Length: 358
Ligand SMILES: [Zn+2]
Image (cartoon, rainbow, N blue to C red):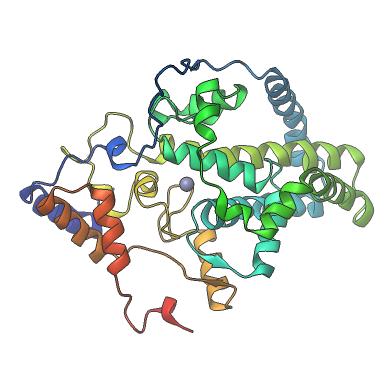
């Protein structure tokens, strides 16, 4: 687990302790904006009712996908298998590089052509419009690790990954959701176009075209098309998309865990345990959704688009900036997140840095 970088950073960590860094409890690192109760206003219920249509849908799609898995292993033509992999990968790319890194956190800017492509890819995920997904995701970040967070990782992986999807938001959560700022997306014509025509796009791009292809172009059976390209693909993409919010339970520190010895500041220095790093610095384009930092397909694709001039203004945090922010936080006793944001605003990338290329 500990490579050279980790060892170097562990040494840095000792320095941080000497600097008496303020406590780095993760829940305290993330800005939580909860509206103060207004005097005289009735207290809204925090209980969440079951969403029965969602319960039935999830039971059925899991059962139908079992048969899809059998067909995938023993029946489908090779072209259908490749098509399944392609559609799943493209949909998840739309979620990670599009809905998450571009639209939810603005880790980079994209040309209109790239935005349209990512919007179509995200439609292939079938998880609702970009606008709605981003609203939930920003709500999750704003109330991270509190009982308001619908994907609260303190309640365990099963809850944050699956059970929460089977419940409606509480009236209390619905009210708080209204304060999520979506003004940037409301000015984005690609996002608003998809929002307006979401169910038409869903029917054509997510359902009709993929289901038709195996029948039309390589003569596979209706069963293989419906159960593999239909139900099983949907199930895999759903779980991949849900992991964006629940991955912290898989690859992050466990609730209450102090690792290594008595501080979790190590994840800032090593940029490991990425989910915690992501909740502190959500605008770093290198933060992977599935347990990686500065590697993985999504990061590679963003770099390729940057090289082609389709993606610009990629935002990241240099290790030196993180170290400066830690020192500033220790010296001034200011909030660590404020210090990181200030250090990032002042950081100068080296002139030869590839992100500086015109
Ligand atoms: Zn995020």
